[in-house]
Image (cartoon, rainbow, N blue to C red; front, top):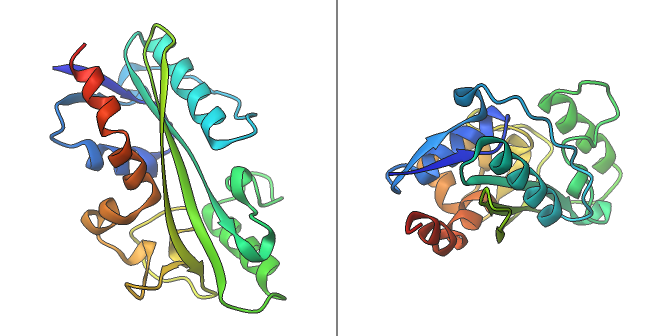
Amino acid sequence: MQHLLIATNNKGKVEEIQALLNGYGFTLHTPADLGLVLEVVEDGQTYAENAAKKAAAFALASGMPALADDSGLEVDALGGQPGLHSHRFCPIPNASDADRRKYLLERLDSHPRPWRARFKATMALALPSGQVKLAEGQCEGEIIPQERGSNGFGYDPIFLIPEFGRTMAELEMEEKNRLSHRARAIQNARSLLNEVLKL
C-alpha cells in the first residue's frame, strides 16, 4: 500500500483530509506520526505557491509523497480579503479562531449585507523527486453575523451555505466532505492521487 503524508500541522485540516481519503488506498501519515517538525514559511503570492512549497518541503523531508493545501476565505465586501492571509488576518498576537472571526465581523459591520464570500483551496501533491501537481476547489456562500455550529474550525461557524441554510460548522463531516472547498479540491486531485498509487 502506498504511503502518503498529510503535510500540515493543523489538526482540523488533518481530520478533514483523513476523512476525505479514508479507504482510498493510502496509508496516511501525519508529521506527528513521523516525529517530523517542519515549519514552512508561507510567503507565496498565490494559494498554489504556498501549497506547492509546503508539499515539496514535507515530501523531501519525509521521503514519501506529501499532500498539502493552502486555502483562504475571500469576502467580496472586503475586496477579497482576508484571502491568502486568512490565518494571519487578525492583528492580535497568537490569535485564536474566535479572535479571527470576531475581527472579520468587526471589519464587515459597516458594509451592507449579504456579505458574499467563498472559500478557496489548492491541493498540492509532491513527490520526493520534487515533482508537484496541483488541483483547486471552491465553495460559495456568505458571512453571517452570528456564529452557528460546532463541527468546523476557522471561519466555518460564520460561513453560511445559502442553499442548505446552514453554516459550514453545522454540517456533519460526511456532508462537509461533499461540499467544502477542500473536498472539491481533493475530488479534482483524484487523477493525481491515482498516478501516485500506480508508482
